[in-house]
Amino acid sequence: MGTVKEKYQSETASDIFLSKECNEPLQKTPEEQMDKYMNIEDLSEYLNYSPSYVYANWRKWAVSGLRVILIGPTPRFRKEDVERWSKKRAIVTV
Image 1: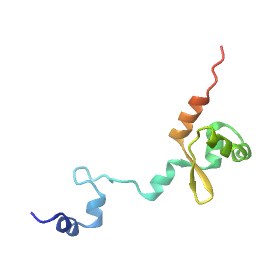
Image 2: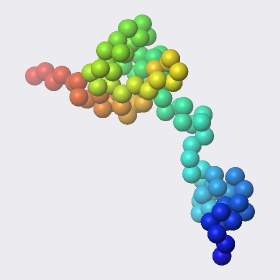
Image 3: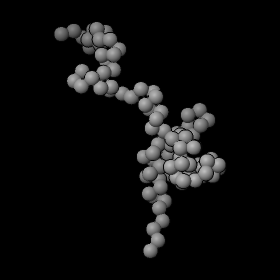
Image 4: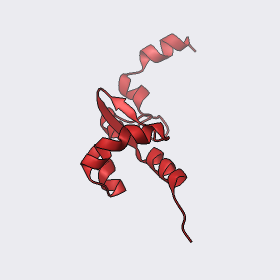
């Protein structure tokens, strides 16, 4: 049995990327990772607001707890974070 360095030098990049047991990717491709982020238009559709309203308020929402990921100058939002934030802000009326 060789050293760890020798073991990984003998494997190709696709061998490392694919799980040996099930041949499924160990990590998502960049395209798959970007699919989990919503932009302003996606968020506006999800929250049922106009895109202009969401764009005008996303910074205020970030201060109130909405997690925002900036990719360059563009704000992005994960669906899980939006759901968690909206549940904390939910107002229950009787």
